[in-house]
Image 1: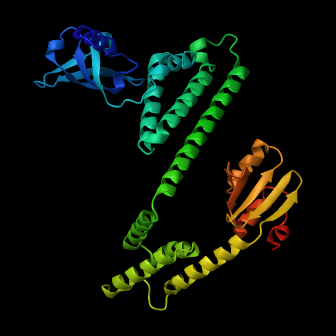
Image 2 (image 1 turned 135 degrees about the horizontal axis):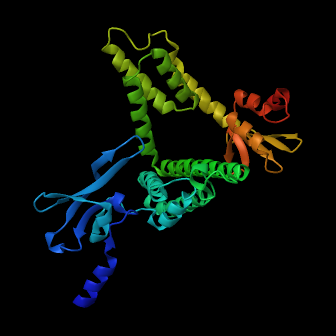
Image 3 (image 1 turned 90 degrees about the vertical axis):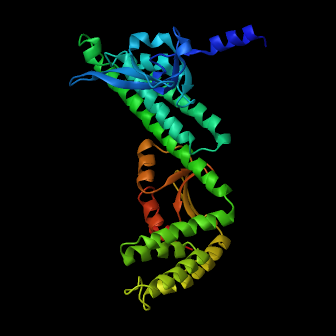
Length: 370
């Protein structure tokens, strides 16, 4: 590439400071006086006025070479171009959709759209930090799809303050509001589910040694920072019931050491805490027996209940997708949807059996049959 071609390419790549991007600009250069070098840009760095409704702001820039500070007003944004961003992942391509989304509900659709763009960008960039590199592109793409859906649905909502009261379609507007609220709930559920799935994948990929080390650090911290022995015992008992023999043995040895240097022991010699190793070993045996036990099914009108011993789950499989009120009842009773099994499930316990009876027409006697 020749010098002239490179100069032209650099000129094309220059992005001017604008309302759709100034919140994420870090460094800027003046288009009129580029010889002054780079300036650190501070979005809304100066408050101009304030009233009950809103505040007016200008922006400040500090020249890197000598720390001189100047004020940049919105009308002058086009005289600066951005040389560095606070973050690269952004939703700038949705700017016009975001502004259109608030034409019917805001006197300042640009400001409102910009606010939502900033909020979503902050959330997306925070999410990205928790996600492995190989998972990021798919997550970002899906996140942007959802935001576009939300903006499009919001664009159908109106406000009587904006459009005027004459022939205002109240019933239609209520329906559009409900559509938007449902979409927000679906987006929130997707995001939580996606992040949990990614977190599980990260956890599953860890070496056993690393998992064991992290588990012990957590348990040790729990012991060191305990307030009430009863609460500590309950937490350690749960670990024992999960068959974590090595972890419980470490906890027992650690508490023995702590007791030697305390006037009052955490657990007395007669406390049932000292039998947790035995409980953990029993849990291992029961778990092995359960895994070898044959799964059982109970049929009901519209589906079946599965006692899946190998997965330690009670599962409900419906012949057709259940109604929204049934799904709500399932969630309220601790059931979660499993794409892997195409079933609603929760851990296989006596409490789970009672939860099943609150959702579908089966009895405790049917569920407890071996």
